[in-house]
Image (cartoon, rainbow, N blue to C red; front, top):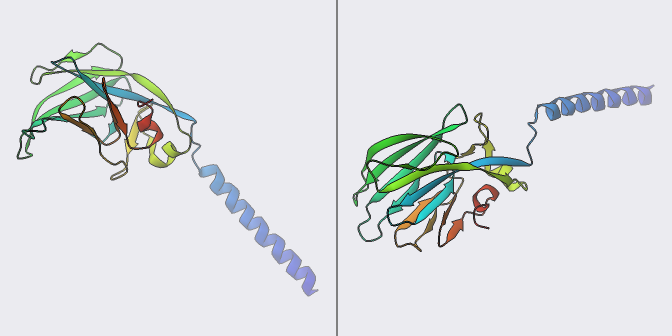
Length: 192
């Protein structure tokens, strides 16, 4: 009798664990094999350019190494998925930032000249990036299709100085002369 009771109890435990596991499995979001990441591209007055994937919460800075003054560009994807807002700030050696202007740019449209900084700003069409697993750990898609979000402290700062100024972002920076990335798939896709 005790063997039968033990057998029934074991089946009940296994059935309960199996049902719980299947319910949890159904709730796990399925990861996509690739995401589309729009690109912020800046062109300076001297003809050089820099670009970085648009990741909510990051900024791209273009700083004069000697004076420590420069500009910050903060892209934010808008809810409709076709436009990006780019806030342009100017900062001095003291680190204090002053907002110069905010541009609303359509993804894939021609570059727009900033009226208050020496840059043209463009949002390039999204780059398709294969996740290879590390993108899933590094970031996730936001409700705005194709925009990657960064978790605080997730990406290391990446800087290049091959043009003279220091150009930095939290993901990757590609210029017409060099490129650096923080070893995440979505970041390093530009540096190929």
